[in-house]
Length: 320
Length: 294
Image (spheres, each protein chain N blue to C red):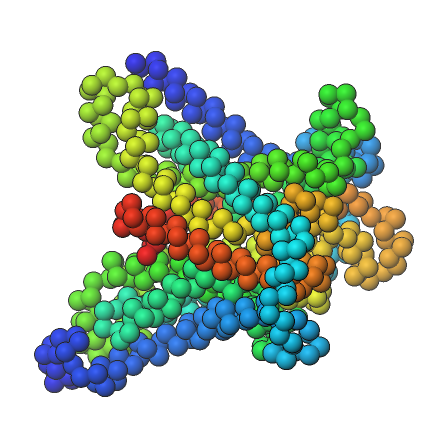
């Protein structure tokens, strides 16, 4: 035992012979086996599976034995208007969510920072983060209670106030959905992301404000001249990282909340819902695999690009 | 100056109060709708104050609720098992990565990290899980695809171990003859409860709320979780009858359809609303930890 300890002390890490090092730290390596095995199955095998985008998927033949078709799936996909619609929807929704969402969450964080009463601050924080905790299935029920054509609160109570008695068929009218989905998204995410900004706000040194107060700066001036400039790097970083994920959408929001209504395809379909419908057999599986491939590759390029730009600005803020 | 500052405080209170109300109001409508008489709903729609109070929907669900009880059983099992297994898997991967001595740790870090950047996507994952491992329509379909999906938790835990557990402590445990596993269990983990609680809580919420795996891999109603049951009922309210004992036609005519729909959602969301005050502190802390880069 004492001898082992002595050799331990003698041998600085890295200087010991390779085989010894492996033997000595084998328990640490073995410890990681379950996790790595899991990543292999759950993450790396599916990456290889992307090749099915170049196959004519036939479940009865099995995937590996399905015929190769080259780029045919992609040709079909990009010939239809589907590719355009799902790409447009995914990107436009994300842009609105990122731009407006950042402004709203930031505003909310700044307001939270003005609250000095601890109890009320805690209460506001807990309530506005509550929607983030609720599953999209439940959210779809909440929205249904408002929008149901026959029994919804809007059709039965709100619209009659304005003299509209016939009601609106919310679940088959495409034009309302950009508004509905944006509102639902903000309902669910603004509180959560405002806490992220609020955490950054807490890190600002109180001395800055002290000095500004001595110079006679009003609270509003302090916010504009101190808080926002200090938060700018965080804002830029979070925004760029979100831009990197612009090819991905919140599947639940676009699938559950419109109740998977086919009539709403034009304004509610995103790449994620399109791929899912392909898998469930309600749209073409070949085109869906192509759309999935397209999302993985373009998404990856965008993440790398966004990270590269963050890195250029500030190395510490980059993901890697 | 003082009055301006007070004005801003009032403005903050009013805005946040309105925003908080906006966040809560849909739940009020849901609960009120579930407690409204069926005929009143048909006549006046869902409303914030029941036009005619009734607990018919809940009576109905209690009488025919074997499916709901079963779905709760599935959800609870999946949540408990998934959280424990996910936490174990994350810890066992994160701990060696936090140790400088581990051979090839940067390569392995990269293997973990790369999964956060690049995904095979839904269809390839589906094929792996259904063609290679036949987990379709088994309870594992609800557990396995979620175990370690978030490489971020591994990074977060690793950073925590690195920054809060002094290497000297680990070394002295080894000198006392403790194995790596013993050290992890008796020295490192007791010091790491905050990060374990955070990752555990978020994993737990993820499992409780998951409907996607059920929708993809489960067609047998025996394995429906609460979320899947809700999902199914939203698409087809008759489902609740067709799948339960009794005369379906007769039952449907008696069923207070519109309030049942809301009541079942209340049953689905109530546990979270009730438990939230007790864990909100950790939830918010977790969001903040996640905010500071892992």
